[in-house]
Image: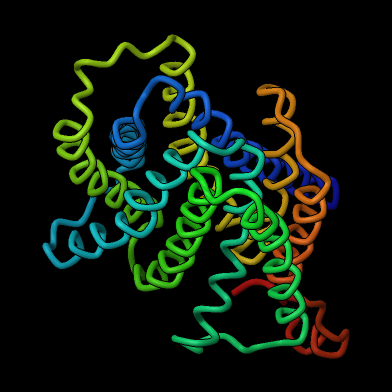
Length: 312
């Protein structure tokens, strides 16, 4: 029995690392994609392909999308916060900054989520460790963006600000996404992706005329990998881990994907980080870890609850 449990843990941890790799690698795929594909068109194709793939997986599993108009309005609003605005901002930003920097700046979602919940919704308790995490994470962002502000008022600084804005959108989406109770977790994912595609495809046709493009083979392959692996497959793994590791355990990917994403961009794109960016990376990882790693409960409380802490 113990061997079986150990094997299960190994499998789940391997899937957690795979999820961090898929989401960490998305920034490299985006960097390769926007080289010859405009941002709106790239994200329109990403949401369309990934949404259709998730729809096919749901069909195999016998899960149907809801038909209520009110639910689809929520899907559309979630799409605006979780894909339409942030993915487009990141894609545009990566035309001007390295994928490694985008990975670091975009990893601070838990920090902004905490700030928004503390100021607006107030549904989570404020702890000293979380406050330390906020300070460390914000210090890391300021080290990366703030230093550039002294010598670069051009597209690089604006692009970094756009990626930070995308991170704030993710934080808002995480808070709003708490309202999708009673639905299979894949339904909001597929529904919001399809709703996002419905908004992005017309924008792409009007603003970027994709029929006039001549994308490179590397950009096309990057787009397909982004949609198939870093979006559709990543969502499937994510929902599996939510059921096995729980929501708290699954959030470990938030700080795992930072060094993984930076390593991928350095290895495959030949990018390098400045000394300040490395210090910022360490601060952001520390901050996100402090925000997401669950606190250990006293042994007496664990005995009282039958050792089921962390299963909510």
